[in-house]
Length: 468
Image 1 (cartoon, rainbow, N blue to C red):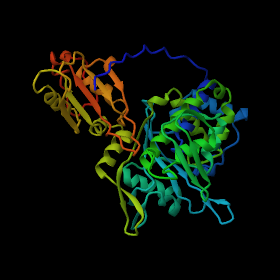
Image 2 (image 1 turned 180 degrees about the vertical axis):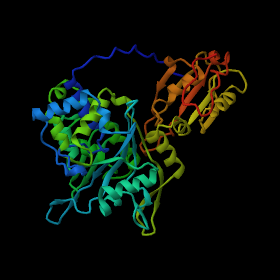
Image 3 (image 1 turned 120 degrees about the vertical axis):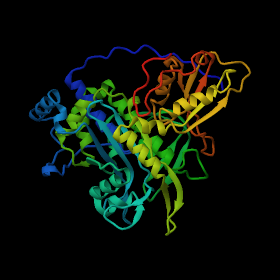
Image 4 (image 1 turned 135 degrees about the horizontal axis):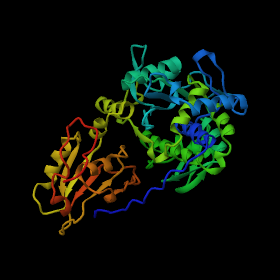
């Protein structure tokens, strides 16, 4: 594969916006960010703290002015002593009686993720946990699928179980109620997503029907739910089967909602959208805290939201049920990276391939050693398949979880940002795709300065200041 050179357009200067415009970006951004993979956030919030009941009131100007004062002064005051907070987001599944009536008793979490919010840097990260993950359930002496924790002990047991797994106890929780996703997507006027493969699934008992053709298209609420919840088709194996692809689609839906929130039509109706959002959730965050989060994160772009998912190995429990056994080392690294902000953990999780495109012997190996000293632990080396030498070095992001990994590697090696590109290989008809990696093509320009950049301490989280 020839290296691809792409130029980066000059960024436009940021536009100033009124506080109400920020409020639209804000609350609604948090609403969409808290979209539990296929479920969206909604309207009526019941806070555990002080027994406060909220939901209606954004059209009450007295309340609105009070919220506005909080936003314009010190929104971090809503989280005293905190520079970073975590929120466990849960979407519950549907249960139906023999008389075709929906009920929530004993409901499990259909989707589950931890949201990490850095109140200083305004970085947003999201770590998804497959519902079949087999883990010890907090407060019990046995292991089970992680989605059972909520059905056994509600939000508290779910928070304790996830905290035990990740080593980071959630600060708050949000439960997205049944039909929350459809309600919020419809309130936004639908969302635009790219359906990569045909999705066909019918579950009459669970009232889920998914029939979507490939292509970029506009989805209403029910179709968005189907897009996010699809796990396998009516017939045979599809490229979209399994929890890994489902979580990927849930992240795509979240980003689409964030983008739609910023449309002109939605920015002029923040009150309506806030009330709609609040009607579908139960949480221990207060209304004012949600406004605070909105004020802090109003400028975050959807492409800046860092998402990843825990992976594992399919297995069966002693009872014969399908489960997923997690890789403890990977879980720790993901938690350190996304929830604690540890850059070294992010590098350790990033597979790197170094390709020598020159006739300089050992160039790829020495570069790999240099990258290992910076914390990259999974590195492969190889030689360029073409006879001619590569003149200009380049880096290709093949779809790794860390969206900033390619740019960071380029900084370490002194390779220009204009030489970066992102080329994600799609799954084949059997659902298989090569493992994603950051591929570095070393050219004659780099060979002239093989160190690429001055060495930095292994524990540093900052790239070198310049190349040599």
